[in-house]
Amino acid sequence: MRKLSGIFLVGLCLGAIGAVVVTASHSDAAATQPIAVTEIATTPPATSAPAAKTEPTATSATPTPTPSTKADPVEVDAGKLDKIMRDGTASVVVFDRDSGKTTVSVRADRGYTSASIVKLLIALSALEQGGPAADVQRMLSRSDDDLASRFWSAYGGPAIVTRWARNLGLAGTRPPEDAGRWGDTRITAADVVKIYRYLLDRKSTTILNALRDATERGSDGFRQYFGIPDAAKGQEWLVKQGWSCCRPTRMLHTSGVVGNRIVVVLSEHPSKVDYATGSRRVTEIVSTLLGSGEAAGGR
Image (cartoon, rainbow, N blue to C red; front, side, top):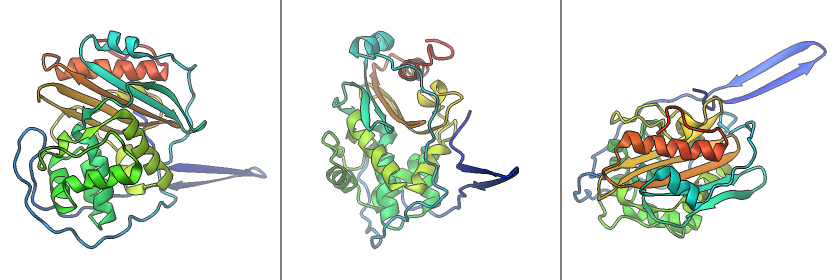
């Protein structure tokens, strides 16, 4: 599995070759009291947030996606998505950073329960307020719910969502009705693309490194390489995935960057559709978007 590993600059002069390799490192830090996530509802403990800090801007270690070989544009419409999904609903947005244009947009403004996609906003707030970068990276790369709950409690709870929605112009994003259930935040595919554009434009090193280093298994043991990672084999990618069940449906989301394209697929399945089947369907959607054909293993 290829991932974004850094920036390689190779200079060639008078037969002498020089190479510079820059990589990013991680450290560890402590976390605080957890609160409820998607499956269990409790009231979040009251905590005070640390004094505000600004996240450091990028250094040369920022894993800026490099262009990949692109297949011919693929026509994707609601009918094609529905055929792949069979039941349930999917939304798709693809944004080409080279042209600055959205190349695919299907049900871009339909709302979904975010599951772990909201961790992108939690990470932004934690870093802005001086939170531990190593734990933020772990929360994202391993999709660690305990750390997300602790950061949610410590750095603003529902106000995290409302503030970033206002700052980034996320018209379809709103906090959960139950303040303790961060995974019930509502999002749209169009809004998730805006979040990625912000992260890439700001070169948010800590967050981008974590998405580059996403592990195959999440902290709960769930295999989170469905969608973009499975479909983009041989290409460089950054990802944040989301999954949850069942209130009353099953959510499976894949989002990230493949080469210079931002790709977001949000999907909602009946609870009768198991995770394995739903994951294969989401991977097939991404394979179609990338022009890479049928996903490995079929449906």
